[in-house]
Length: 148
Image (cartoon, rainbow, N blue to C red; front, side, top):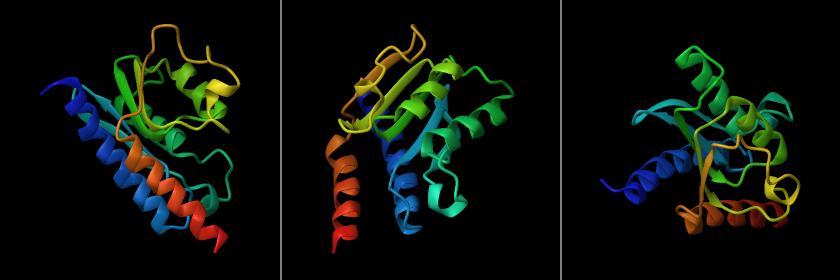
């Protein structure tokens, strides 16, 4: 299987997490952490549910992965997330030394690149735009529903 297919496979799992967030009236962002082809952490936004501004999808997935693998450094892992990480999550991704980050939809308003492009570990590889249309659609429909 080529890398694009692998990325789409795991982004679909992140999209499943985002749909769980949507069902809970949370901003529909989902994330999974993969190590050696296996999901070792997953998460979706729980900000409203937990009344916790730090309960973003990436934070949930990173915490789960660190717990599963028994260590805080995730340099051999890939994080798949449906939307470009915010600056808080990007900082945590940097501290975890994630080996690779893959996201779907860009976030020009709140994404980390607007504030601190160098926040990831220097060796972290980045791929963006994977299943971007599907990831964007979830966000657009969610925010449109709030305006009705």
